[in-house]
Image 1: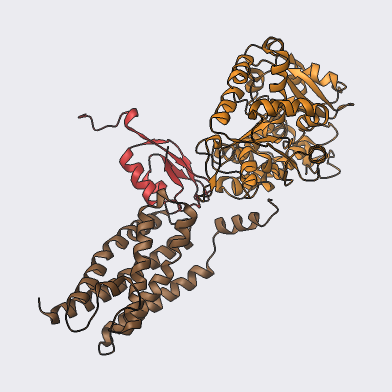
Image 2: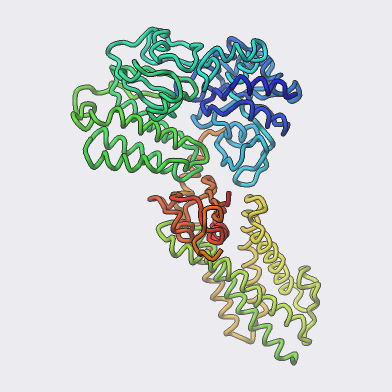
Length: 366
Length: 188
Length: 70
């Protein structure tokens, strides 16, 4: 039974949902604890599209990966947003679909486990991985359950079919293997790209139609990610060390070119406000902290000055590991990054809200 | 010890138990109903709630032992824990037995709180209101008609506890309100 | 050990169940070296390693049962 685990370990596959945890360790624990498998096909991050793409284009290989992981025993559950195309495709294939509400934090690992146990699709405190079983904070028992990202499961079948050497011929030694990236936003052809760590970010953007000269910002990883200036994006490499140097990571494989016609401080503010509204209302630092962060961002964007800047900076120190899930960490990471790229010019010129470059509409991300 | 002395000791420890129980329950309600910016007072309150609830068991135990041991009226050990089995004042002693059963359950589950499901602990701890009410009625009915001071103390405890419970129902704080508000959104 | 100062290995590691925590603020008084409160009364862990006896008491006194030993 451990043959496939050895292969995955040798291949160096890591979770493609954003956390990049070694898949072999997770799958080994899942087998040992006879954990129920939930395949996460939600694409819950803003701009995400790759997992739905896997279902639409490689469903058979995905199911083969599932069979390798579960040894064909337990029936897996496929988590997809309610009434989504992905959910319909899965249901049409006769698979068991966990219908996930359209909330940002609902596609988070522990939210899916809670939902699968008849609870709400809201995150749970994770004292230990739920692959071992455990309990919700109120004491409800949680059976051993493992959540794997759909792309990760698909990669398992590829590793099995094509071998470790094929897998390792992509990417870097530290981050081997092909990985999907969704490139969208202000590009001519938004695309799902079979990419790998170590290639220039510009190569990815060029495959989606290229970077318009007027573009000023490029987002990496959606609301839980970071912003790069266009110059940074032109020289950046798609790997964790480079993204880490800008405060982020590879995340769930999302590159979003920001529309230069929209005021960036306003767009960032809309995203932070959306993040605040998506708090699951379970952890104080999140349910009060994120609305306060949103207010502080708006105050700074509208009245850039030393005092609003300081208040925003102080606020951003109050989120690290202070939620059951990483939602507050993610939104504050994004806001920190937005402040890094937008702060200096806001402080210099107050261009967005005071001048004529007003946004024409409020953006919705739902 | 003479029966007479035991009888007085039983009544004295009974009324002290009522007062201590009321203090514990009221402090519990205040802890449950109030939030910042009173962390200092909350810490003292939590300490009192915890240790006074254990301390009062000494008075309650004395109250029970002396009531059974004295010879004027017939209260059996069985009727201490099984409601409505006492030959003497079947109903009011029965209320006392209910209170004792609830008290033991609540104290034991609280001592074991970290080993049992939080949902169960919480559900059981709500029974404190019932425990307190049964104890008040038991004390008021038996405490007794010929002793206006004892009855007055019991009545005062009832009024204070009732006011605290009304406050607990009426009060809200930001944490609970925000949780409720967001929980009512679509999450399934 | 005669040294009264606790060494690293003797310390207990604490954590907060953020779902259970409702901001009573008691942990900031029982563990003043490790925990401060934010503007709503929720704990900020300045350090998560504390003396075991202090940690045990703090865990007992948390009304929400949110504080735990790792």
